[in-house]
Image 1 (tube, rainbow, N blue to C red):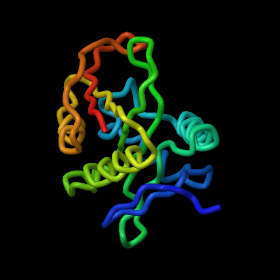
Image 2: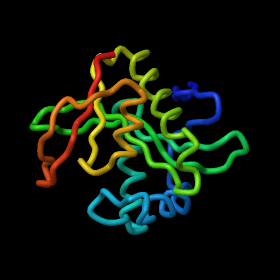
Image 3: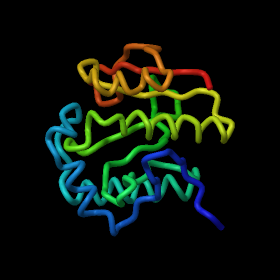
Length: 167
């Protein structure tokens, strides 16, 4: 059975797996990428991240996908995961791009493809959760049609902005 993943002009999407640990550890271990997370992820935490996505694929048919450019170079990850906001589950679009590739519009392109993928699957509500100070992430979400829906506090106790759109 073919793998169903988003598509875009400059990027390829595929499911992540244990063989992606080196590239994903580079991405999620980078302090610049993880500025708005509690801390950069360790290699073990990154392995857990990959397993979490494998579980998401098995349960939902989607998760965060690995992104490669047209030359096959690793760019980051982007995809769809279920997240809790104020005790309710919502489908979130999330993205991480290597610092050297930021500013090229790749996060926006990937997020647009994931939004369209969600819409094609009958999803009618999509969110993005950001730290209130993470303006670049908010800009990506806004470029794909999301706007601030609520300001609240994550389960971890940190303030968040939740952007959302009807699809």
